[in-house]
Image (cartoon, rainbow, N blue to C red; front, side, top):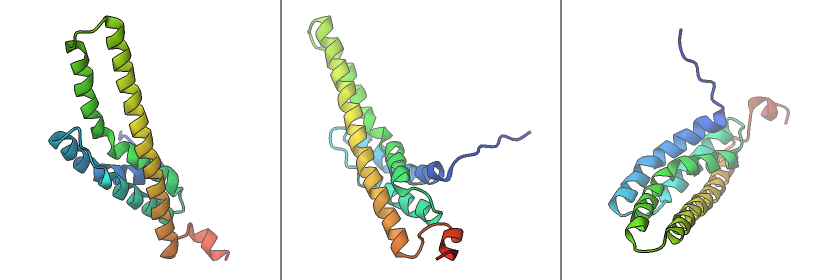
Length: 143
């Protein structure tokens, strides 16, 4: 009995683009957590958008998901901040608010990266259309 995973093409290409960017983001976060550059996340999102558009998929959603996968190592820096909060002499309520604010900032940063990843995926889809890969073969035959 074998395990069969039925994964959509959107997630398949998002994982390809995101996993391409993941080691570069991890190395960047490991080297300097306060100065993370996410160029490879955008490149991976654009590549994912290009690949999925060749199959007739949604390039924006794929780029968005690829950016989410590729930017996960950037959250390692937030862990350092969260571990630092209890070492500062402040009341317990202030420490709880500080941790909540750190988590909100992390979510906002990942959301911003994901939006730019969606735009990069759309750009990759546009490149695929410019190269003649506009969608499925059935749609192209009807033109």
